[in-house]
Length: 190
Ligand code: GAR
Image 1 (cartoon, rainbow, N blue to C red):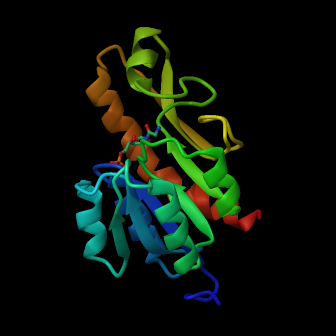
Image 2: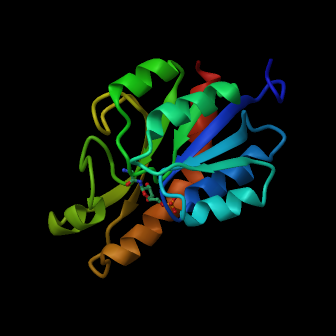
């Protein structure tokens, strides 16, 4: 049975700062949001974001990469009856086996206008290529890195004065705005 009727039991996976996690927690507390964040798992037990989540009514787990991360996570996802995983700054690649075993949707936020700049250092690459726009994308997670169906994207202009830091800041701001919207859009169209 769903713990919170009408809302999907959601787990968020993080690796560090957790600013997207914060925006998702804020969103999940709204009456009309479609998710309830039950569980936060990090592959980095020292992740800053875990401290924030622990202040809310959320179970938190830090599981080191080398200690059977995927199997331990699968057990927790089952225990808490999780319907949806949102990756939010989660820097570990999940295996095809994990995706298959979980068998429910996994979403990811990526700091580029996919299909451009899969992988790392997206802002650096956009500036180096003199792109006019950067942005963020929310997509479904499949076995192929950063390649699943795109749910929502938003662009920002790259100014001549932008460097990696200023661009990251601008993109992060739109990430916080569009991830909650993308989740609700995705769940509405299920
Ligand atoms: C965000 O910019 C997110 O898009 C990116 O890491 C940052 C995490 O920030 N994710 C990836 O690069 C995934 N490949 P946060 O921890 O403050 O949410």
